[in-house]
Amino acid sequence: MKWIRSFALFWYDFVVGDDWRVAVGVVVALGATAGLVHGADVNAWWLLPVAVVVLLGLSLRRAVAAAR
Image (cartoon, rainbow, N blue to C red):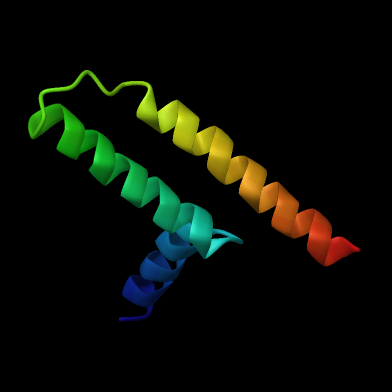
């Protein structure tokens, strides 16, 4: 049982890392991209790079504000 818990904690730390908001944002962006591609038949390849840039900027802004 201990190895299952260790495995789960590893993946949680790997996916979520230091900022859970970024992980949630990536999941939302993936869902929005899938919804646009499959639901609205839109070529939405551009959405994920835009989301990553926006999420990175927000995360950096929070980190800089916390360091001050």
